[in-house]
Image (cartoon, rainbow, N blue to C red; front, side, top):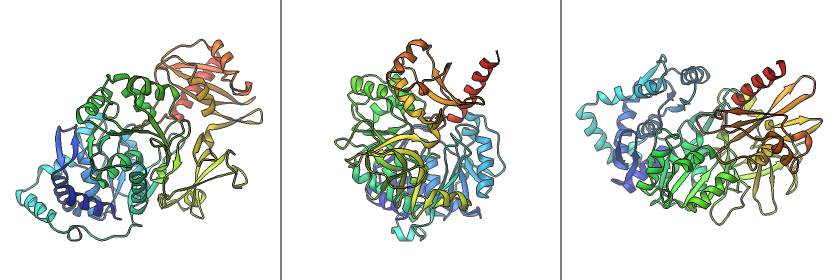
Length: 507
C-alpha cells in the first residue's frame, strides 16, 4: 500500500473529523482540510526537479502535510534532525543524499539559532503567496476519487530517508519503503487493538522513525486524531494536553516519560489506555512510579530505524516486565552466536537478527554497509538478546555496549540496571568504558544531579556483579547528554568522562 494513497482513503472516510490538534499554531486541522493543504503543497513542490527533498520541520501539521505532499509529488522526503547541530546536519544530509532543497521554517531556525543553509525554502513563504484560485482548485481536486488524486507507484519505492541516531558513530541514511512502513503500521494496529476513536499524543520528532511511524502514520492510517506538540521537552504543556484532549495512546522514550512524570498531576493520565516506551531501557523506578502514582502501566518495546521501527512490543495482557515483548505479526527474530553465527536455543544470549517486510531497503548509496548488515533477508541489529520459552525477547544491549575486561565480556547495560536500583529518586545514570593503555578498559559511571556515597554503592553492587564490573570511578554531571529522539548520547557521555577521567589521573 502506498502511504499517500492510504492517507487519501482515510480522508474519504473521516472528512471533517479532526486529524491534528496542532498545539504550535493553536488550530485543529480536519482530515479534509489536511488533504486540501497536501494537494496545494504538492503542486508547489512541482518546481523542484530533485528526487530527494530535505524536510526540517518540528512535529506539527506543517511537517505532516509537507511529508505527504512530497510523496504525492513523487519525491522522497529526507528527514533532518534539528535538535542538535542542525546546520551541520543539513550539510551532511545534502552531501550524503545529493540534494539541495530543504523545506523548513524561519521560526524554527530562529528558535534553534541556526543559520540559513543554501537551498532552504521556508514553508511560511510558500503558503503566504497562495491565490484564491489555487485553494478552489485544491478543494475540487480533493473531491475526486482516490485514483484520480494521486500518482501511481510501487510499494517497493522509497517513502522516506531517515538517519540513524549517531549516538555511537556517524549517522547512516536508512531507506524505508512504502511496504516497510505499511507493514509495521498494520502489525501494530492489529496487535495493539488500535481503533479510530483513539487519540494519539504526537510528541516525537518526525526525523526519528519512532515519531514518523507510530505517532504520525499509524494514527492517520487508522483514522485517529493526533495532539501534536513541537517540543517533546515541554513536559508541563504536554501533560496538560493529555488531560485536556483525553489522549488514549502515548509513546516515547524513558527520558520523556520521566519528564512527564515530574510535571504531571493526579488525573492527567486517566484517559490513557496504552503507554509504550522504547529506544532506551525502561527503568524499574520510572515504571513503578507510574503504577503507584497514576495507576498506569508502561509497556516496553524494541526496534530500530532499519526495521521501520518496531520489532517486538509488550501489550496489555501480553506482557513480561523486563522483556521487550513478543515480535509483532509478520516479523521473525532469531538469536545467533556473536562470532560463529550459529542459531542459539531459547535462553541463550547472542546477537538479535530480524526478518520481515519491515526491514529496510538498505543504506542510501552504501552497498558495502548494507551487505554487511542484511544477509539472506536477515538484518543484523548489532544488539544482544535472548528469546525465552514463551517467545518473549529480552534485550541485553548493543554489542558495542559490551566491553572486554580481564578477558571477560561485561555488559554496561547490566551495570546500569543494577546501579539504577541503588540510586536516590530522580537520579539517572549512564555507564561507559574509558580505555586504559595499561589495563585495556576501566569502567566509569556517570551519575546525574545528585552526589552519592560511592563506597556504599560499590559494596552493594558487589552483591549483584562480579568485581571486574564494578565502576572504578563515579562522576556527577548536571544532566545526561541526550539526542533529539530522547536517547542517551553515548558518544558525548564517553567524551565527557574521558576528559574527567584523564584529568583526574594527571593530577
